[in-house]
Image 1: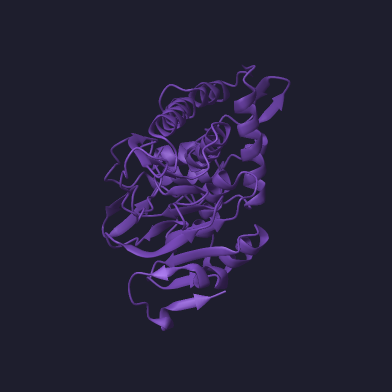
Image 2: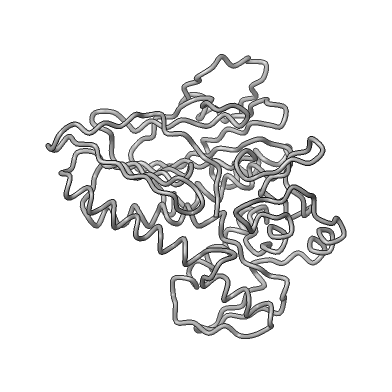
Length: 345
């Protein structure tokens, strides 16, 4: 499972063995760089809490993996074989029910049931294809488009009459992991931390006397386009076409598939959302960037309003920027932006 990356702009230093120490650990999980940084705790307390978080990340990576051995793969195989899947695992039932709600809430632009389409485009692999899939295959998959609502759950039994369903929770898992990490840090009385899962970021408390600061990756350059000061409890997520993609005949094809066409969305380079400390804020920062990236330009802003997203920025295919007024007031640009290329909503 991969996700497009935000760059953390801070350089963290260990400042000794006292309470002002900053402890950071990085690893490669979910197919991306994962970082947890804790400020203002003793080394032992911070290190122990970080290890608990990373253990949870590794568990979720294996638990929700879309194409390797996992509970998701077991469910997909049962649905494909038109079998009833029996489970006492309340976590996966809760996750699937939440994804059912989110597909409806996002008008179907977030649809975790289309794993067959994602696989057909070559994104169920560590190395991506360099060829476009057969258009007949894609059109057939799109015409028989499955939906999360077709998964029936009754007292530990899971089934579906549509064997075209193939769950891919890659657009949900990292945000869910953020929220799980927050719970672990709260339970261990960690007050100041930054959790970064390949660009899905959640801030706890502060970094000393200032907010945590993160950068937003420029989708066509190696640097960041701007930075955001994250207030305590806020989370930020970006979907973009610049990490998981391939190019054929000068056309870029990313892993962000439009369920309405069966093809990768092409009207944006990236979409970033910033959410306050609401319930499931980590999960929603992951999920809500998808419809803002995928939906047609004339629908993106009404969808943002419907979802209650006050802070967002969308970089269109031509490089022009559409941004909410709240986000514009918060972002600190790292390069000169021509005002003619910015549309404020």
